[in-house]
Image (cartoon, helix red, strand yellow):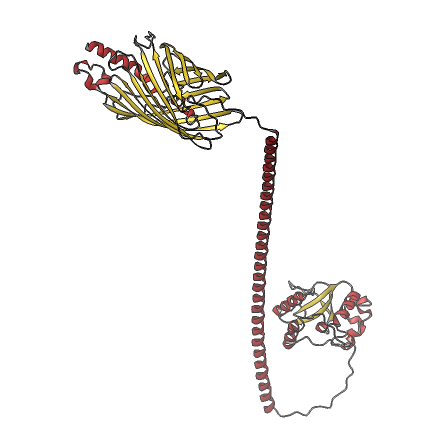
Length: 590
């Protein structure tokens, strides 16, 4: 007797590894609760569903396999569905208890066409009761070293396609390789989602004015390392109340099945498998019980597939006024959507324009701020330079005044110590005029002397002293508001009215070049000449300056030309201005 018991246990272990974790999908009445077969059917009934199934295999054998399955699934919202499944399977020494949670989603394409996706994950506990064997019978190393309890991961995934009354699905029943006998407390052998595949299909044929239904099913199982298995079933629903049918599973034989449905809420079913002698079965019958109960109200506007309620939804033909109202509603909705889109676009454009205007305003404000800061810095610098120049000039004037006072005192002291000398009678000597031929050869008979020969016999006035330089520089501030202001005097009576000097060009690096110049200032100091020239430039005059070696002076001029006539005309024009009333001509020659 112990030998037979051991042989039975070894058979259980040899086939259990490939099928124990898949009995959720191996129930003969899988169509009563398709969620147990394919997780994408979670919530497919359109309301909450509670299902219970029990299967006993190989009647007449002690410790023969049995399975119990409890599931709950429900639609959640907006095509989302949830569910859970709890099952327990016992095969001799082995006990397998698993739990999985599921989530599914439905895509509705209208006209009773939709696709569903589902995924389940969870864990299982495997238990081996070695106390049921005598110690001298445990010769298998897998049993000798195995732990009493171990845990492993569970998971499956599925997708189903629905076209009116036709339903096709694909299931990956084992995402993780199953492990039942292990020396570890928690085992995940490997992730092998493609080690098994289930393909199933069905179609509902309504007849007798939709009172009755005939629904054939086809299931094809593929498992790596095992032969493929085909299963077919056919069920008839009479008045959507009584149902019966038959099924055939390859290598397991034929089963009879039937049941009843009450108030389209409760379905009860049973099946009986005859004494079959398939390659994977023993000569003993099996039976199965199923119960499925619908809870709560059915959600509206959902595509439904249910074994409990097989009544075909009535098609209500809409009237012309209803169709027209729906058309108006669609057009109104389209118009509102168009207006909202236009308003949104305009708001975005207005916002973009506002942001651009604000950005431009900020840019201009920054530029104005920088310009104001630059002007302020320049004005401050000019003020500081003018103040420094003024202080230097005042200091120089004070030094000159002190020197003049000292010199006057010295002369006064000398005069006091010297006896007066009788002065001789003055002799009137007629000054000899300068001869024309004493001038440079380039000027004899030339245009430069044609109208100003008198200038050659007039003794030129002495150059400006330091006091004259200071007075000339002060003209910059005196006439800065109106530098071109005219006077009412006769230009012929102005100082240097006929002044025209001729100077030979020297070798200074800043020497004036050959030409005719309109001179408006003469300076002993390079700094004063530069300051006066830049001041005239700030007053919008084309002023410049240069040096004459023979005079050892710096000359500020407004015009340089090769034509003496142009120089005279421009000189007369400048003399009408208060600022340049004493302008005169200078000719630099070789």
